Image (cartoon, rainbow, N blue to C red; front, side, top):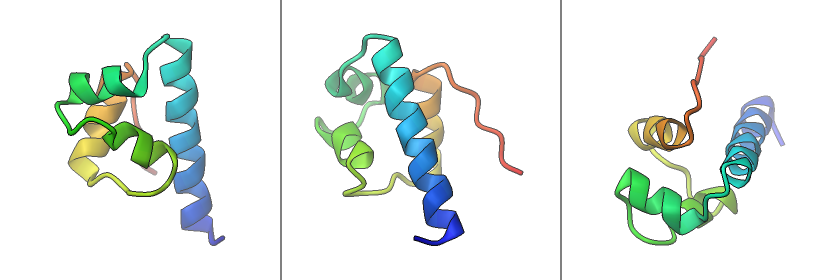
Length: 69
């Protein structure tokens, strides 16, 4: 796994943990973002990658601030 992939996987895992901390289901997040049911699950399982806009929406839905350096 390269450095970019590793950073992405760490980000997704952090978002999953945050979702769980908030007591939200994947479907709850799908509905908050306005995406197809099951989309959050696919992102969390690394089956699909959200576009940048949806990644921002995902973070917003979990009250997470993303900083890119």
